[in-house]
Amino acid sequence: MPPLNIGIIGTGSRGIHCFGMLFQKRDDCRVAALADLNPVRLNAARDMLQDSSIDLYTSAQEMVTKADLDAVIITTPDYMHCEHVLAALNAGRHVLVDKPLSTRTSDCLRIARAVRESGCIVDMGFNLRHEIVCKKIKQLIDSGAIGRVHVIDNRDYYNGGRTYMGRWNRFYEKSGGLFCHKGSHDFDLLNWYSGGGLPVRVSAFAQVNVLTPEGLPFELKPGEKAGPYCQACQVFDKCPDRVDISDNPLFTGAAREADGYDKDTCIFLSEKDTHDNGIAIVEYDNGIRASHWECFFTPLSTRRFTIIGNKGHLDADLSTSTVSIYPRWTQDRIDYTLGRPEGGHGGADPMMVESFVNNLRSGAAPCASVREGTLSVVIADAAERSRREGRTVEIAELLPKEELMQLG
Image 1 (cartoon, rainbow, N blue to C red):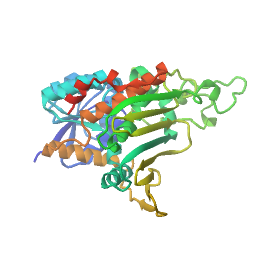
Image 2 (cartoon, one colour; image 1 turned 90 degrees about the vertical axis):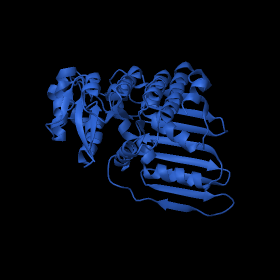
Image 3 (tube, one colour; image 1 turned 60 degrees about the vertical axis):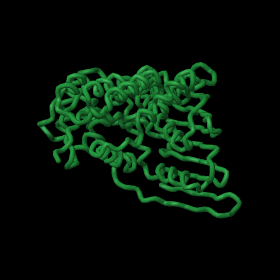
Image 4 (tube, rainbow, N blue to C red; image 1 turned 30 degrees about the vertical axis):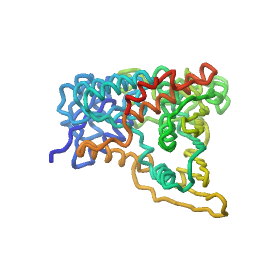
């Protein structure tokens, strides 16, 4: 059986360091083409993949129509996902799109309609569905270990999240807000754990409290100036939040000059209209209430879950790879410590790629399809509207029931 030809749109870190490397390591796949608006980054990406036969395109549309491809991986900035997914589907290509599906519910519905017309597979890049702790939680819920779920609490502590304020992610127009860009992972998990429940309404609160000019973690001496980005900053050495990308040819030197994109903009001085901490509350039609909160200035990097059913209580922590069950009416505690496989995102990325390749070969349904991608985005969309407009947002405002039913 010949190897699958894979095209990648977007040659940033996710496109190359993750998907590019993973597909190139497989015997049953090869990266056949790359597309990016930045020609310098394109060539640097091909060099990193060590394959001079990879075709390069500065037009995604040209790549999906001209290159000999079995599937397309989309890792462009979030606001471009809809355009690129639709281009791939219109060209008859199967798709793996890194989360989120898009930045607006309306665009997700456009994609859903295109999927029905094309008959192609669209697999969502929700790597947490392949993460060992998250999978174990799902297994325990489905087994009835805590009975019927009523309350879900999900906390995303993300020390690395502060770098979002140095990248395009900090702009609502490009990311749909951080409830969308980052929280779409978590909202998908809330949906996954909800036992088939559908979100009904969302309330959210968020703000930038720490990553502001006033939050600069040291005093500037007379004559010193911070920013505008780390590589050019006069006080780089004394900043505890500095980001060193000097050895990354995808975003430095000629690549930076070609498009003017600074991936290491000062997280304190940068212009931004997203949040550095926030909480969203979701109510489901089966009575489940769920909360998700995210913080980007904590020194921790983990996700923690508390899920309570009528027969027990579950706690989990991704950083320690542990899950604990406290059965109701007992003094018992059942602990699971899980062995973590190798690979990005705690071993989840290789398993996500493996699942996608299996879908292409066997025709099996994706672990997370356009339906799951849309349901995640609609919660994020509602959360962003709620926090910006100061009100509870009904899901039906964004996703009418007739459209929901057509998602399958």
